[in-house]
Length: 336
Picture 1 (cartoon, helix red, strand yellow):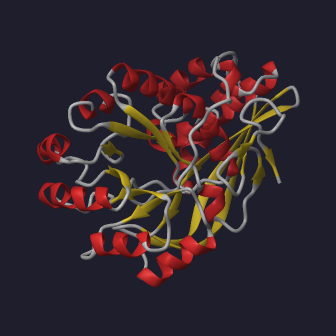
Picture 2: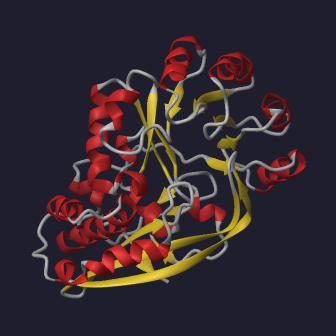
Picture 3: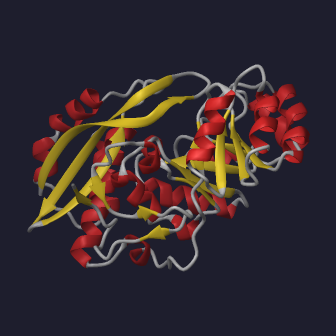
């Protein structure tokens, strides 16, 4: 199995701001795995919150390059366990795991949703993210990209007022992501006001480790609450079930499609809503997420809509939120 590593810099269409950071570019690592002319591609982005850089991921992977290239590849799940045993970070494992699944699908000439026994006849529509900015810029972004569902990043002193102003300009569904910026009391107080403004749910309103606060919120909020920063890996799902109404799975954080499939199954067993989110990936990472869509209640996979210089072809997001799936198997990825 031949391994390739490639650092890419994605340029964002607009400065992207959340409650804790802002950026204009997103560094990303593209991994290729090739067997007999079939190439699978995977992706993981850098992330300062989790102290992950492209260089750190490349160093981890290079340290076991020979083991990867001599690995007797059969099933992605077995390859994933090998990577876990090598103690790579989840971000590095994700890029390799996505490449392994894309390769597996291409070898067997099936898209992954078929490999997993699902159909793309139904899938949730991705939201489009509006980052924190002066209100006139947030409105301008909405007008630039008319969309049926918006995820609105909050975490300011005027959050409800922001949503009131945005509501004047759109009848779309709103989802709110406070990225850990609120208190329990603030969340409970904001919820009925936001519900009246057409908000569907609240994502990660409290700090990731504020379980006591979230226990209050999940019982007193009139809006559902979805875990993000509180739900990183498989072991987090069970605890989140007592403190949230649903979970948002990030492939980069949990370590790829292999654990995500298990997290989806566990969450459904517990009666939780299931969402998969992105980390401003290119079409490489987004096409992998798209393979999970028939299993999801919600999805946030707008990465390619937020960047100027997409680096791949694959699943294409159309203007109305519908998708065009490629005829190529696996995740359907080809690099530009």
